[in-house]
Length: 214
Image (cartoon, rainbow, N blue to C red; front, side, top):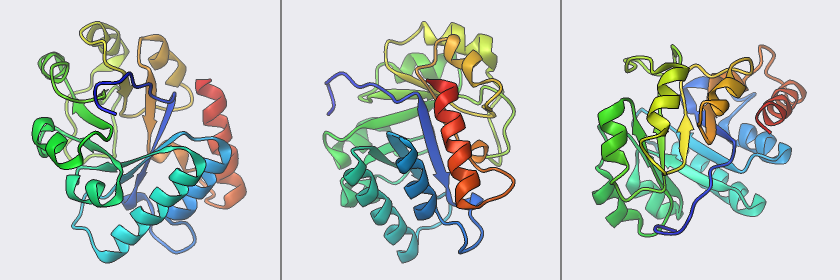
């Protein structure tokens, strides 16, 4: 995939394992719902040490994505992405993109950026897309970087021709504004989960998101 044009889907759902605290709703179940609604990309994000259960979850989601024709992305871990034949997303403190590329070969590779210098440097990295954020205050990271803001998206978008996904505090109410500022896609974590976590409620929320970014 590397070196060929890459287009980000408008909605980039992230399945963060810290958001799933019981058997009633698992990342695998969430993936099934999102894919059935038309999601074209899913990222599996697990910040703690991986266990066999995590790998099994990721493998099931990878298979679901393959069946649905969607892109499956593993966060941080180049080794597991390689084993699963998955795309990879790395951050500023993870394996550098040049090294990650050697592990995953031609699979899609994304890279997180948080400011002007990182976007400029990221534009030169062997990656298919950049992530930029946090756009708004977020609780999905323990020590978040400074907020970029919508105007920051607009300014920094001009520094790269690579596809850009905006992340951090993005909601149904502000997603359109972020896209209009130049982001190609919006990444969402907790915003995908309604107060009532049953299948019908989650499906309705997913459909709402897909309509909002269409």
